[in-house]
Length: 258
Image (tube, rainbow, N blue to C red; front, side, top):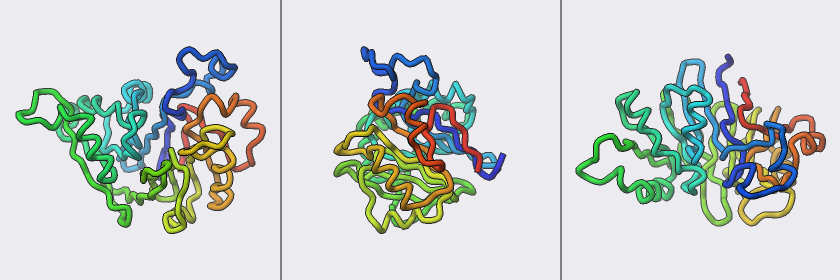
């Protein structure tokens, strides 16, 4: 293992792939790389620190699939339910680790988490409920989770400010539509980058394929991976043929060693 091991736990959009009731060729594909859980990412350091970026509705399944028996913190990009609805399942880690789970995000997202999981914050506390330690991120300042320095990067999801994250020479961006120049500077020098590419057609709140490729061309990472993919993008094996040599279509379970 290098300094970091990145596992893409899910690479699908908010409904996942296949979609319920859809009979398109992507949703009916037998290729496991066309089966996509909701987007999430696991980061493991050589020192043993383990972070998750987001905890959507497939969180429990993802933690069991990849045998994640310890989790030091969850970095939340934003509070849409495909990114936070699995937070109830941190109760297992509360029990195993005998401590509250640190949840990092911007103030808006944490306030919405408090509303969505209001039962976890009521006094007196009901025994066995998830226990969160909410940690507000200032986009202008990096922060540390144990030995890992995390640089927050504000991106816009339509008109909603959300967070991307950089750790060492790795960056993870999802649900972005625009990034201003000041925030984009934080991406300079990354060698490995994961970025959302919803579909080919224009979308009001997500990068389409061309917009994602344009950002990759500008930042010039050694290798980039496309995530938060809908069935509209096309079959994995077909889209892969179209991509530049330093760009790959991500898939669930893809591991990146850094």
